[in-house]
Image (cartoon, rainbow, N blue to C red; front, top):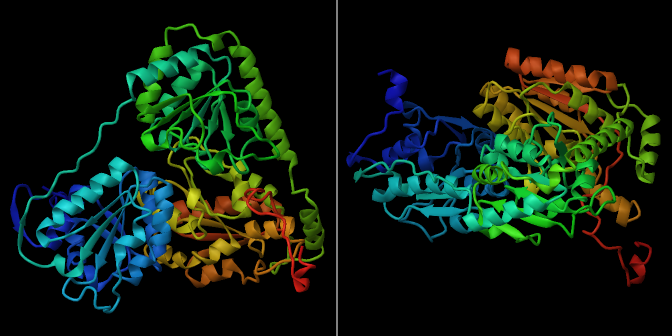
Length: 604
């Protein structure tokens, strides 16, 4: 047996060991090879034996980054991402990132060593109650109540993360790593998910058999369930256009003739116009989140008279947001197979107009691509003013400020095959939704419903650790980049090469757009005066490229990918952008200001 195989061999049967050994052996049993975090005395006894167990702890600059890396790792691999830190502040630093993982349905296990039991409640150094911090953002919280139960609770946290598809917390009093116990390492338990109930599947099949314009929403459950091929088979049987649910652009291949692009903020007009015509919608692996179906581009496109078939592995999501006709609690992959089988040998109403619908799909997609090609800049009054203002000045690099939409189109054209892309929250990053297309699942990672800044860069680092053979690219605006740029040092220190694209437009664009629309351009706290991010990257030991000519965008990305894939180098591409702004996240989120006091009467 090789030395590596010995590392990964788990003891069997009741065995004498320490709780630290029980903890580490249970992680080995669950296939853990990489963890993210910052070392701490609270778990040092266990950390001491990570290496001989074949587990690498990757030290980061900030624990929030560690938890985002665990999220990215799990989203790419389909396995657990694991994060650990020192009790108290090291753990509290992770809350935001675990919340993001919760809304991404990522099976992240956060290990939270806690104050020792002998002094708990006395307000000692780095003491806090760590379970309430995460109760809103975890599917299960395991608190080790006795050292002898270490393996039991550890195994349960790993099992629940996969069965519930979300983060779990393993809380361990720091003195419980020590002692002398007899333990049996539990073997991982994984659910075999089915297609759903026979009655609901039959009812859905009957609805689809009578549909004349069925549309499929391919959601995150299609990615997590490895169900793209099964979604394709169902779509092809129906001749149905397939739209991606919001921020799941990788849930259906963009080259497929039935692919129509994403719904939601800054999504595809083709997708929206086609779903508006639907008489039956199949929401496959989608919770139909409220933000992902809001009106966009001036269109309230949700088909209010259509019959909705919703398929989700979590029964609590069925009918929660949108009124549905049939709810199927089942696995996206198995349910798609079951429906396709039920429709295989039937004559469907939509068979009669298959060619006509195919023409409509192609026409709407072509019109949207033509519009994107011509949409070189934003056309609202504020953006036009900013374009004119920026035309009179030069960035510190001496070139000119570029239109974000033109930049995003050029980046799209230059994207390598098999790329993984993460996007941060913000105005330009959201506009990018119109331009991000993928051929395979587990390729696109966004901050999802929690919408926190500083997400994209550490997440793509974790994705790169899980899939080092794939090109990894993150998008961030200059505001969000300021929250995460320090993890460049993690890339350099630990040879994790990635490419970061930073849109340098000198503002907090998403919120500033609200000041344009509602507060008469009274800008408070929205402006950013930045140094060169490319220079900062070089100071950290990475490569840096400043782009201030449109024709350099594609070559810069290709050069950075070459540095990443062939030379092991992290590269920060700093793109100098105008201050123009895309549409706000949602126009119903604010109201026009009303002022009653005289000293504020002009602030309307």
